[in-house]
Length: 69
Image 1 (cartoon, one colour):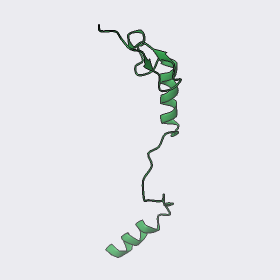
Image 2 (cartoon, one colour; image 1 turned 30 degrees about the vertical axis):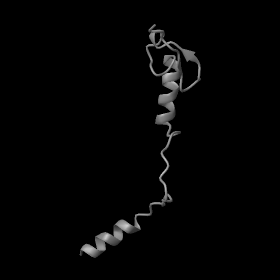
Image 3 (cartoon, one colour; image 1 turned 180 degrees about the vertical axis):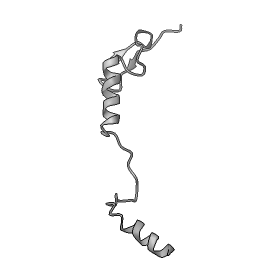
């Protein structure tokens, strides 16, 4: 009645039973480490709708400092 269903690893897409993995939601420590490496290497990002990424020149900061004087 309470039949466990297999999960799908988000890295390798392998099916596994949660009871057999100590690295949930991943199937193995290897997949967990690969995902962490992707985060730390900035391979994942969140899109910002309606905004272009502006290049920072520091000019805006200098202008605001001059206005305060």
